[in-house]
Image (cartoon, rainbow, N blue to C red; front, side):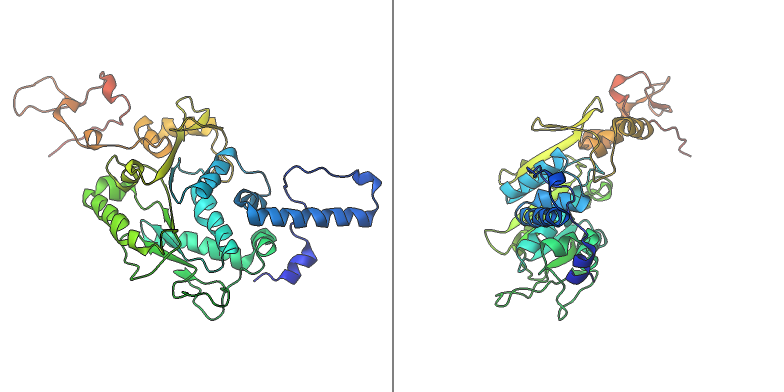
Length: 359
């Protein structure tokens, strides 16, 4: 584990990226005065990072936040129930499920968080990343900004749950600081101040296995709604949209929730939201997608798949099922062999076409 002493010796985050400030004429200062200025800037930066999640995240990356990521953090500040759907590889989990959760814990060591995903294995990845930041102190940021956020040696620290030292007198400490769960699991009477839903749906559960679509929605609306610690509990939901009738779309249609849905623009030049905001490429902190990379991805995977995974245009039953009018053949008599999807029909131009023989 990193110690505060080791951080002081290495001065690991002296004057990283910082908001613009008015500096004196450095050249006119003596060397010891320059050091004092740097120390003062670091103290101010740490104080800002405790108050502002965007500054905290920026310190981790040593660069300013992208405007879209700033919007996400602001939405989390403003809405206790918020869904954010954005293209794959844009940094949703890192921004929200990991770094924002770290910031929340640092500001409230008594916090109880449930990380919920389509499977516990998936949720464990976020939990392990949170634990890594606390224990290994990447760039020294967590311990510099939140020096009291450290593991509780008397409580479990595993791939399924982690515990930080809580203030004396914390009334209910039965639940761990952060726990990892699969969405269809039962938390068995647990409570949470933040329920972090991260990709609780998937292609398999929303499209391929239709029965699981309702199972996940029932768990979300029943089991997990009962886990909230009280009326002040927060529900954060990040996802990619899969199907018009899966849990994510039902949340979007629920007036009790706010939502923002983002997708790659038709001209591949930017990321746009349903609410009209537009953001430049690339989006750092994720997979750094560029216009050229998106165009190549669309060409390789086809427009239909690209629209779902990068433009958040969910499929519905009309496109999932095969209909006879999808096919063509020279002989239209009953029982005649059909040959494939009509290549001349523009309605099906976005679909990948396959040829097969049924023996």
